[in-house]
Image (tube, rainbow, N blue to C red; front, side, top):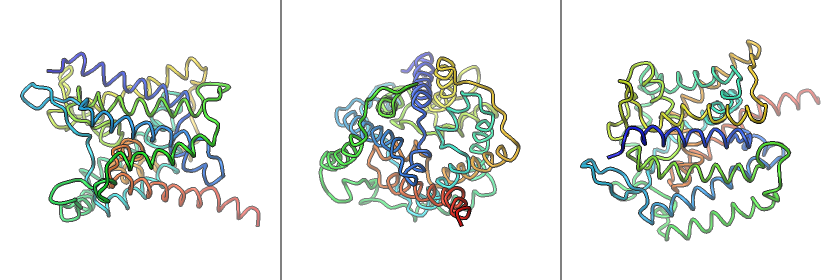
Length: 363
C-alpha cells in the first residue's frame, strides 16, 4: 500500500520539478504555437523536444512493465498508459476553444500556473477563470452541452472497446510509428543548434529536455502513487484541487485519492499546488519574482481567457499539457486531433488580436 507520506511527497516533488523547469526555460506552449506565425521557432523546438522525450520514455516504461499501480487488493501490478477515448466533436471543438482561450489569457494551462509563482496577479485571475470555466462546463449551465458532446454514441473505438491510437488505427508496430515521429521531430529540433548556454536560466533545449523527463516520471509516479498512469495534466487536477479546498473532496476516484487533514485530495491535485512554488523558488534565485498588478482591462481579459480555456479544456478532455504533451506521448488519436485544433484556435486568435491590427496600422 502507498503511504500517506509518499503520496504527498511524490505529488509535490513532481509539481516542484515542473514549476522549476517551466520558469527556468520560460517554457509556454501558447508561446510556442504563437511565435511560429512570426517565424520564431525557438519555443516550438523546445516543445517538440519535450514531446519526443515523453513519447520514447512513456512507451518504454509501458512496454517494460514499469508502470506499477495498486490493483485494489494491495498488490502492485504493471498496467498500461492512460489513453483518452476519441470523441471527435468534443476533441475538435474543445481543442479549438481552448486554443483561442490561451491567447486571451496570455498563457497556456501550465504557463499561467508557473507565472503565478512569479508574482503576476493577472495569472491568479487566469487560474480562477480556468477553474470557473471547467466547473461550469462539467457541473453548471453548460453541462447539457458537455454531456451531449461526450455522449457514448459519439465515442469512437477500435473494435469494441480499444482506444484508437496512431499505431492500432493503421495496424503497424508501435515502435515504427514512434521512430518515424521522433526522427521528424528531432530533425527539426537539431536545426536550432540545441544545448548552447543561455544567458539566464535554461536554454530552450535544456528546458524541453527536462520537461520531457518530468512528463515521463509523472507517468510512473501517477501510476505507483496516484493509482493510474495518468501523467501530467492541468484540467482535471485544477478542478480536483479547488473542489478539495472548497468542499473537502476532490471528487476523484477513491483509488486515486487520499485523505489529508480531513480533506480528500487526488495525487494530481498535489502537483498542481506545487507548480507555482517550484516556479517561485526558481524565479527568486534568478531575481525574477516581483509582485505585478496589471491594469483593469488586462485583468478582465485574462480572466475571460482563463474562462474560455476552462470551457474548451473540459469539453476537449484536456489542456496543452494533458493533450499536447502527455496525451500525444501515448499516441492516442484523441490527443493528436485535439492538439491540432488547439494550434488552429491559437492561430485564429493570434490573427485577430495581433496580426490583423498590425496589418490595419500598415494600411
